[in-house]
Length: 220
Ligand code: DX5
Ligand code: ZN
Image 1 (cartoon, rainbow, N blue to C red):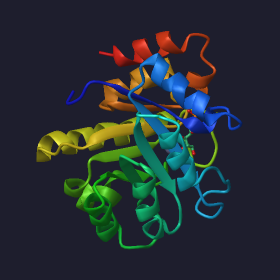
Image 2: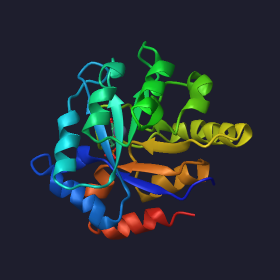
Image 3: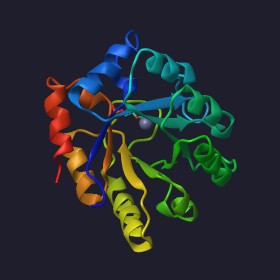
Image 4: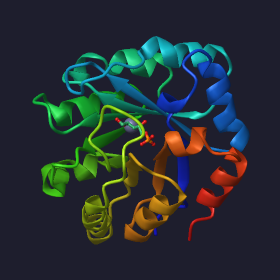
């Protein structure tokens, strides 16, 4: 494995009437990252937060690494706003038609790390030409749009493939999974090569969030 496991609790499953408390719960459990799901009601059939949500949490004192997952048809129009709002990493989907390479370069130029995301139906080959430009590849393990969906075990070969390419080509991107991740499915993804784990429902509903985060961080 290249990297120690990182937990990124997904704020989508937090308390939308008190997101600062939900962010603080992630920090208190020892999670280093916080995952934001930005939805436009077009690329995915749901709405969630905006850049102002990130900015407000920064103003409220949240210092976690902001892992920003843009589920937008036109993400290139919004990367400046998210960088300004306090994003540390901005991930964009490969599926919509826009200039992916230029948008990744723009995210870098704004001082953020950049990631590329694949829906379950998108083969790994679709992002192959971009792999030397990204800090992270996010393999969706559910169809994006909603939390609480079952893990797609058929995504494990895609994770293995992207881990293999990383080794073969000497690349350094993190390999993140998102959707239906709990301690059991995280272990399966870890065995396939993943190192970065988004957990919404499983983390925010955990009886003991500290134990959850500690167990995940110790995955072999
Ligand atoms: C799905 C989002 C996920 C979601 C995961 O569209 O990208 O980040 O919050 O939620 P769980 O962990 O509940 O599947
Ligand atoms: Zn997400």
